Image (cartoon, rainbow, N blue to C red; front, side, top):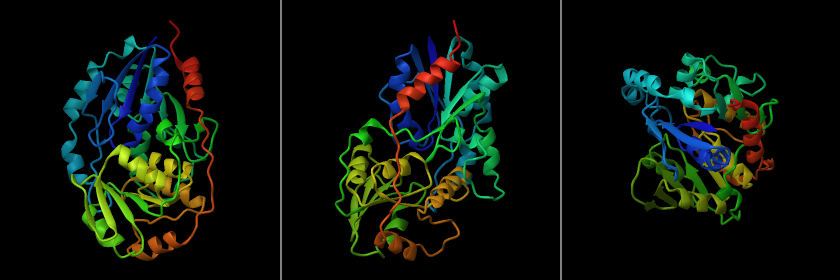
Length: 330
């Protein structure tokens, strides 16, 4: 059996989940990997067959998407060329994690494709989302169209939705509380974060920044460049995680029993939905309209988090069910 696994390369969550899923897919046959996008810090150890430009949202430094840089990075001519050159008919199973080039190529060629992603969960109307008019809804629905859907979310909102894929390296960590707080807000410049967090004294902040290449400290705030091993260690020993409205990062913190505070990126509908879902569990959220962050952060630091989450390890079974149900019979 030949399998194509197409992965979105914007952000770290998709690639992190892929590191867990790739070895499972390899058990069923010959696996080729496709990645498009330019914003991931986490890398794969396996060879990549197709490295494509795709469409990436570029993180800004003020809490949202940098629309101008995102627009500049788009290349419709290259997107169309890459889409036409993919030899999709030679694969018995095409698995897609919110990757647009292969998804649109499958759609135009009439080839079945399976979504295996957090975004696939939004095909269900039962998934919590704010009742707002947002152009991001259109992007979420049409960015990477597929014929079948297997979704992941913080809860089993529908029959095809599963709880998050938690990486083995996270499941194997010993969770303890050394009192510091871990911060990962890739859409905010570290200098801006230092100004904010230094106003919450008597707390050790460990910030991981996409915008800085060297470690430095200012008072009670330590800033580190993004590093998977250092971040995992910080997360496993922290009291809480302050992060954006992504999916994998918050899920891993909740699995480890850490307190969680999220500040979803402005103009990013999926993150707004994730934050809205977490809000239903009673977890604190800093929305884009919040101008005064300090009182919210202080309140979060001072109060315990009572809600617990159960994310069992079901990934191998999910992959097995998917292959048996959707692989083309030779």
